[in-house]
Image (cartoon, rainbow, N blue to C red):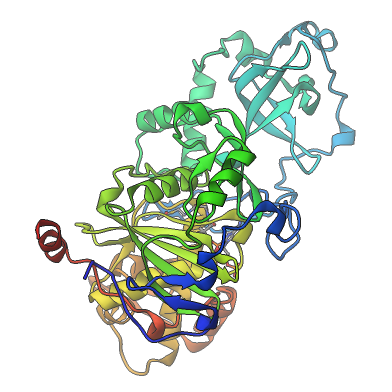
Length: 503
Ligand SMILES: CC(=O)SCCNC(=O)CCNC(=O)[C@H](O)C(C)(C)COP(=O)(O)OP(=O)(O)OC[C@H]1O[C@@H](n2cnc3c(N)ncnc32)[C@H](O)[C@@H]1OP(=O)(O)O
């Protein structure tokens, strides 16, 4: 049997489906023609699933005190909240629109079009002006003017966006920087270098040196696709993805939701859907509980699917060099199932053999499904698989801002639940054995919660009951729970795989 291949007793929700030989969900409907646009329930939803929210990235404010190469503060600010830097739009001088040349209202000092690296205040989506920097510029197709790709100070790069001159407060243009050589091609003044280095620290790319980081940022500075359509949702993208060049500059990229093939035109995608017979991801279904399923997909066996998944994921993951040599990875795709099929919600990838004991390489919940507990589910699943393997695990570093908050939450809840129930003494090693969480992560979490002290050469857990209860309350809900009894999975076995391959 292939690695991870399973058979198991029927689970809830199986009435409309049956198991295939390989253990995957296979709806009777699969034999029917694939869903056509006219069969979709209503128009493409521009809003976040269930929450009635437009799918937009969320800004996080992070105080960059490092702990174990990660952020120490997890304070998160939602879109539109004031971070003390913004100024009310009415209080500002009016920013002029112009057709090029010099801007007359500012002593003729602001040269237009603005150069790359110019610093100024720019109107954010909440109507407030915030300090920002021009990352790139391009000519507008419909009038003789430019638009500018800007990065807002202290905001994650997923908030970078194209703006027009009327969103820029020209009175705040840092003329000295411009005069001293803000350039069009990415050259930097000393001030900008300093600022850029500060930005790097804030964005938590702890494991890159600044040269690597500059190269990464230069290469990936402008998003190459604005939005994607996937299933019933349209989502704004967050970052650059190294898609084949012909897809660069797409306003919308259309993904077929079951095999993740992508297209520049909607009708191309619909034509493909009509031919596409599958209604779930490939691979083996290793978990099913009510309408939730998880599929394990071997990167070596389903290369195209896994590469497409990486292209898709990179649109929402900044700091990772995603491996396109997908052979070395297993992909765990989480789906919400209904009568139309198993709809991808998110995934995590995992190296087949990790020398560093990584139990997760990349994790993503698609924006339309975020803040519903799926991230917690994916993290919990990665540890459940480690428990089955009888190993401890840790996520690959660096963690993103959102990755860190999610992990901190999971580690906090898991460890405090154990401490709450436990009577008598317990060591960090015991905690690690019980939870499959690596000891370094346990120590950093307990340090963060101030529940551990270093005494006489060793760590001592000092956790009063009331303190545990308080931290548990603050850690929020456990999200969607993994029912470990419903996992049907055998760990990847390289030797067995080789034997199958050569047979
Ligand atoms: C090893 C690595 O791959 S690191 C990279 C991690 N991945 C990414 O950064 C990709 C983009 N981000 C994502 O895909 C998602 O944000 C994930 C996977 C990190 C979390 O997925 P979600 O499904 O949103 O997680 P979930 O709903 O379980 O929430 C987890 C907790 O994280 C915190 N959190 C998640 N998103 C946010 C946010 N936008 N703002 C504030 N807090 C947040 C909250 O504490 C949340 O719990 P709560 O909703 O009970 O308060």
